[in-house]
Each structure stands twice: as structure tokens, then as C-alpha cells.
Image (cartoon, rainbow, N blue to C red):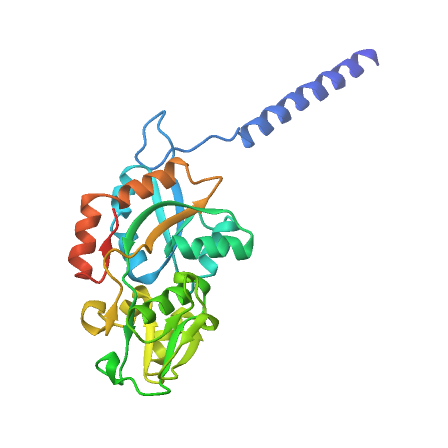
Length: 283
């Protein structure tokens, strides 16, 4: 009886050991897989998600994709058609960076939304312009003509300042680019100022007498600022477009590689050749 019990006990111990071995083989410990083509000890490739408007921002980003890939950064570009979601998704960490705005817009967004997004560096300038399909010169604008401008504070103020510079209105002294329609103190021709979402402005050109349009949306609508605009900002415009990131990742290796790749002689030439003066390098 005692001998039989010892045999049973031996069998139980043996089966337990075999089961443990089998479990170890089925559940190996996790390992980090290096990037394709990477050798032992090399870092895995990093995916960098960047939000951008289609023209020219996404096009400029596409031009540095291969360069970044060679440096271990897979650039993933997400195209947006508005000026709010790219910042919202960046703040929510759905994006790692974005490329569509200038510093005054970012400052206003942070102020109104309570976010802490930051500029990593400048890339290009898009001279803001006034367009019309009804007149060929601003002197032809009639009394009561409708002028459409962006409805966001930074671009709206920018548009009004440009209207003032071209003698169409006069703003309260000292407001500069922070002006609103309420700051208009002189409007001799009784122009009607219509505030619309920036992306909508090219679509209403047939309905208004004049529209002040951001260059990225003008280019998407096949408008050439250097040829089609009745007037544009000077080349020394302070509204350089920036790469924006969060405070927690602005100095990360991938984001720094992105801005360095964009501020090169190659990108400068790309901008000059492709956009023929409608977009100007800002570095």
C-alpha cells in the first residue's frame, strides 16, 4: 500500500513539472523588436503623428518624409480642413505635433482654451491677401459692398489691419492686429464686414465683393496670391507658420528632428520652386 502511494506521488510530481515546462514555452517573455533593417543595439523607429492643412503644410511635410525615415522617424501626416481640431487633438495627445498656424493664432487658442501648446520653430510665411471676382481693383468697390474676413480673433484682426493699410477702413488707434469689427471708427463706403470660418472664404467669393483669405485656403482653391490677389501683406509679415507641440514633448528627439529637417536649404528651395512667391521661407 505504502509502495503504491509513493508511485502515485512520484507521478503527480512528474506531471506537474512537465506542465510547468509546457507553460514556460507557450508564454515567452516580451522583447523589443528593432525597426526594419536595424541591427542589434539600434533604436526602434519612432512614429511621429503630425496634423496639417493640405496646402502647403502637408505638401511641405511630404517633402521631408524620406529624410526623417532615414533618421528613424516614420512621419504620419493627418490632414485637417479646419483650424481647431489640429490643436485640440494635439492637446489630447492624439497628435505629436501640428503644422498649420502662426504664433498669434496659437497664443489666442491657448488663451481661450486653457491649453499650453508651444511653438517649436518657424517654417514659412503665407502672405495674407484680398481676393475678388467682382472687381479688379479696390477702388472699384461700391458703397455698401460686402467684405468677408475670417471669424477667428487672430486672423480677423490681421484682415482688418490689412484693410486699414489699404485705405478701406480705419481702426481705433493702437488696436493693431488685435482689432475687431467693433474697433472700426471710419468706414466711409459703409462696407459690410462679414465674419466667416476661414475655410469657407474661397467658397463665398461669388457671393461677396471682397474676401480676405489665408494663403493655404487660397492655394487649395487654385488662387495664386502673387497673381490673383488685389493686395497682399508685405514680405516681412510677422505671421510665420510654425510647428507646434506640447510642453511635454516639444524637446523630444523626434520633434526636434522634424523641425531640423524642415529648416534646411533643400526645403527652402522646395518652397521657392513649388510656390513661386506665394509662400516664402521663414528661416
